[in-house]
View 1: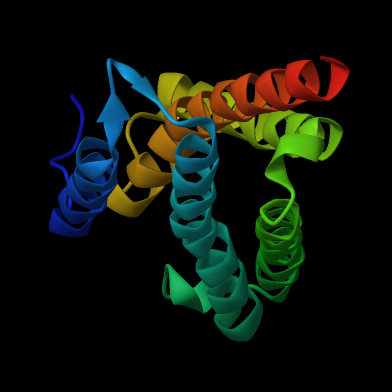
View 2: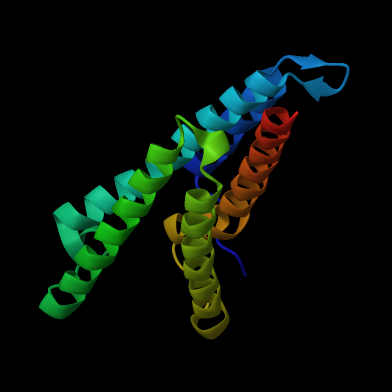
Length: 164
């Protein structure tokens, strides 16, 4: 059985939904620049998760999420948190020229999705983790693939404009 959703998860989803619904639509199609800006805004919001999680994991180690005093586990958590921070910063660095960053966004997205699949395997083997980890799973296998598809759309449209 899945754990209950954290109120911060709901607030995040409502904020993203609000941004999407408040966008200025013209005849069912969003202006290309506005769509690009909306993607950039949503990606900035999305980058808060890995950057914050990475920093907290680096600073507090394994004790951030559990009462653990295992030095080996702590070292591993800090290393993986460094990777999480780097992934978040990598996405963040792609935002200013998001329409030209297909390769970077694709590689980072693939890394996150593979990590999400590993987490999903853990769910199948061990059961559902705590709500923050379920939120991470939703980000990894839901939000990131959608943002990747959206970035690809923006890149294709920008490329078509450059060619014509």
